[in-house]
Image (cartoon, rainbow, N blue to C red):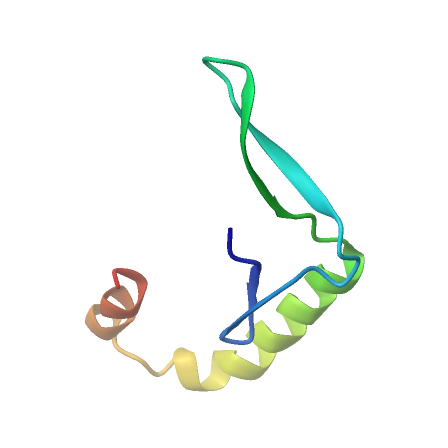
Length: 69
């Protein structure tokens, strides 16, 4: 499983901790994902604030194309 997408890059959580994801129908683990904490959230918010000025100028059609890759 990929890490956290922060500032355009896939990174591990800063704590290195993982969270188990369970299939609710079968009640069995299906994956482990990075368990983000306050430091991860702060890093993501800071990256988003840096990206916002340029991203806000991108037309909606082009934004959608980025999200549908």
